[in-house]
Length: 86
Image (tube, rainbow, N blue to C red):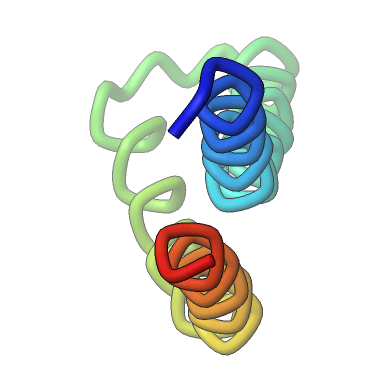
């Protein structure tokens, strides 16, 4: 393998990591922002109010996004195997 192929594989790996992580991180960010706004408006400062809804929503999002994540990983793995064989 030459340097160009290794750089391409590294670039693809970073893109795949962003494709897998970004949706969940954005969902967690939006939920956290919504909960923080709710806490600021109502002046409720309960610690579990920030974590429990975020964990539940991220878990449900993981279940809903699992087919997309699996398809992305399968495509990446197939590209890597084709490059290794070729």
